[in-house]
Length: 156
Image (cartoon, rainbow, N blue to C red):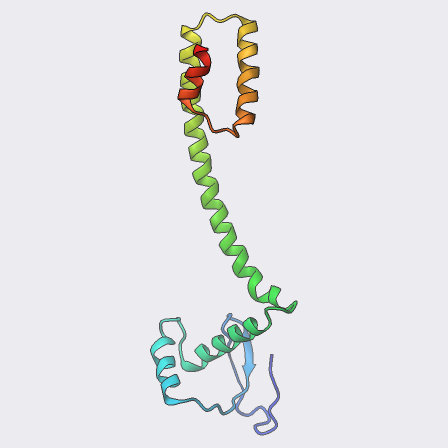
């Protein structure tokens, strides 16, 4: 977006790349900084992948404007892409870890089930009664299964 400047009538405006890669006309104007502030800018602008002070200051002003607009509807344009990217990364990482853990648990449960089935001589009615009782127990204890309490229950 070009802001007209009555002093230069567009003479000092140049078509240059904006911080987001779009081509835009920029208006030149004077700004006064304390020497310490300029030293800080000179130390940091290259680490932010900016080619010059002007680009660094442009990014800083846009960021600060977004900060000031945080309670306004314009905030969506400022934060939405950043939040979306971060959230996607967190969800994908968690999803992969959970999927691996669930797969490993399913394999272990399958091994135990086949091992017990090979050693068991339980009738169908007793198996149905056991499954129903365990389902109720898991609901009651919120899925926190304790081997010692299962042994005590089976012995009683």
